[in-house]
Image 1 (cartoon, rainbow, N blue to C red):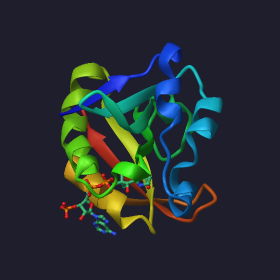
Image 2: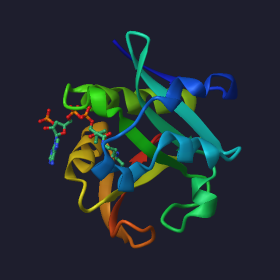
Image 3: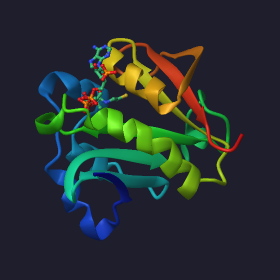
Length: 157
Ligand SMILES: CC(C)(COP(=O)(O)OP(=O)(O)OC[C@H]1O[C@@H](n2cnc3c(N)ncnc32)[C@H](O)[C@@H]1OP(=O)(O)O)[C@@H](O)C(=O)NCCC(=O)NCCS
């Protein structure tokens, strides 16, 4: 069974062993980099299968404040990954199905969650569509890895 759980600073180390393949690093970086760049607005989460960590994501409650592709007050979904040892087993898909209900339960005061996904990452784009994210056609040109689709999931409408 897949569960989504918030990491506290006390158990960040749970996530440190998670990684993606080298050619996927341009999309999310490493866990060491993500944890080192932690801000108070970052809510780190671990994805677990039967209590074993298999993936990670960051819900950024300050996203709408920092990034022009989101409206003030909107959440950001960042650093979503399934560890390379567990990819291709349907875990990303199971997580995508669990994500919207989880967010509507725990972040119901937020109107929407926004993400960017690289044009060269169709697998992740497909998963986000399965999770209910909609592509409104906006493109984000920031970041080092090239243009990204901007996708949004409404949480309270
Ligand atoms: C993207 C990622 C989370 C997918 O996780 P996963 O557990 O391997 O995915 P699943 O096994 O559940 O497969 C998910 C779906 O993607 C599809 N898929 C995989 N590669 C695809 C591609 N190139 N184009 C379209 N769909 C693709 C699969 O076919 C499957 O859909 P289906 O069952 O409807 O056919 C994982 O590859 C990953 O962590 N990548 C590196 C980090 C990353 O890029 N994160 C996104 C940042 S925006």
